[in-house]
Amino acid sequence: MSKRKRIKLTISSHWQSYEAQVLPKGCSPVQLQETRRAFYAGAVSVLALMAKLSEEEITEEEGSDIIEELMQESRDFTARIGRDR
Image 1 (cartoon, one colour):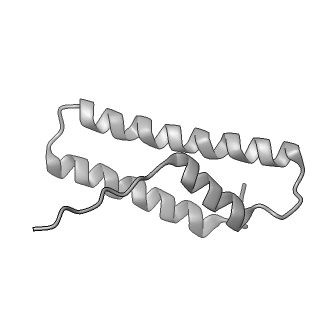
Image 2: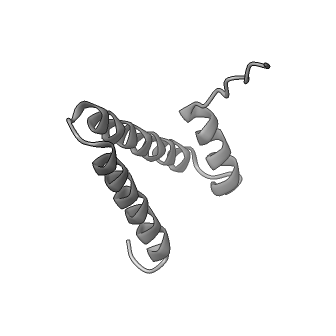
C-alpha cells in the first residue's frame, strides 16, 4: 500500500495564485498592499469561523448545515459582483 503524499496548502500559495490571476500587471504598490491585506483578512476570518465550529458543541449535521450556509453566502456574494459594493 502506497502512502499518499501530503499536499501542502498555504495561504501564501493561494495569495500568489490570486495575485497572478486577478491583479493587473503594474498595479500600484498601494493597490497590491491593500489587496494582499484584504485577502489575508478574509483567510483569517474563515479560519476563525472554522475554529469556532470545532470549539462549539454542535452535531455533525449542524456543522454541515453551517458550512452549507457559508457556501451559499459565498455563492450569493459572487453572483452580486458588479451589481453592488
